Image (cartoon, rainbow, N blue to C red; front, side, top):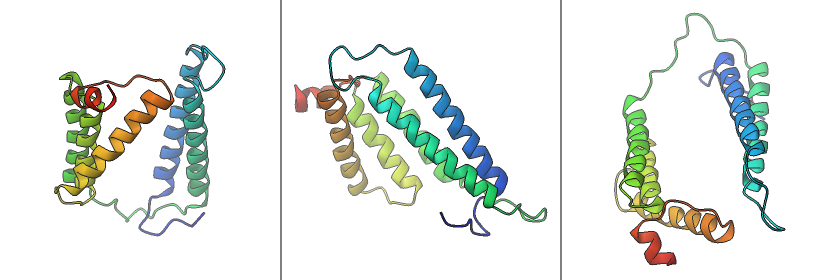
Length: 164
């Protein structure tokens, strides 16, 4: 694990993220206890959730270790300014995905919208490349969840066309 750079996150920020990750892992672990067990032998609905809990715990531990190693920030040092445009693109992507799902257009189009908006927030210009990558990834995720895991995601016209 590398040491935080002087311009990187401070001890308090790292500790806060670690606490949030541990809290999210606890909420998901508690939610797993209320899920129905698998109907047959094989992968049930809790399998992926247990992996997510494990990964959140590992990330939380890594942040806690980084927070313990980080030197406290100097009082005169100021936090970097928030990139409000990037935050707006990500929030717009989330709101857009919710709207797409509510309008019945399906998971693939909603996730494509979210991917393109997030790519724009990270500096990728809005061209055909980001939406195409998002469309392919969203279709693969949709197919994996619906076909391999037998879980349901919101289906729209595109999903019905691709997978019947």
